[in-house]
Image (cartoon, rainbow, N blue to C red):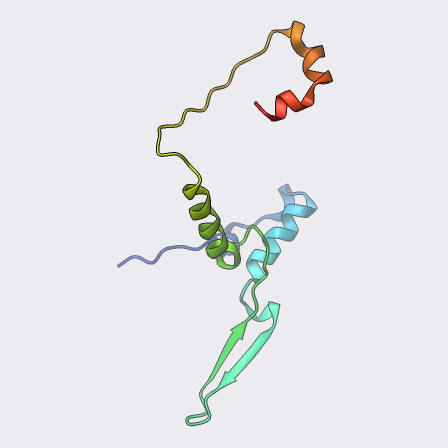
Length: 113
């Protein structure tokens, strides 16, 4: 049985901050530290056998599949409940340049399209 690679494992292997802006570097560092000793946590100890088990805190970053995965799936399920049972198409079209001025004066028409 093959083990599924995680985003955290891929980042640990391939993360190179040189080509990223500060925001993306910060997100990658949070994801790398998520649920590790670097984030801190608590240690649970069994009163019968003295076995200890560390539980590390998550990064809670919105990009983190470990922290936000469940919330993302719940959101997607709520969105599915609002979709009509029909086939959807994404249509893109270009307006004539002569309408550019009108569109700029009426941004509400663009938002409702």
